Image 1 (tube, helix red, strand yellow):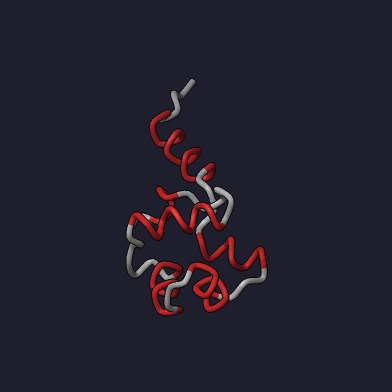
Image 2 (image 1 turned 90 degrees about the vertical axis):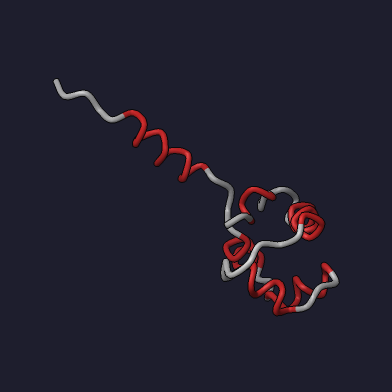
Length: 80
């Protein structure tokens, strides 16, 4: 019997269990990046860059995003 590569299997499992991305959360709630930016009192381009994974939010903004999504999008999910 062939032994499975448990490290590779564990990495795949972790990736699957990861909380959703901000873009997925926004889509699931029917909220535009502009609307979300207004809720958080930041500019729409700021949210757009985060959604498109072009930049990371400041720690303060990451905390606001986590709170606004009720923990569905975690701070660790916002890091590149």
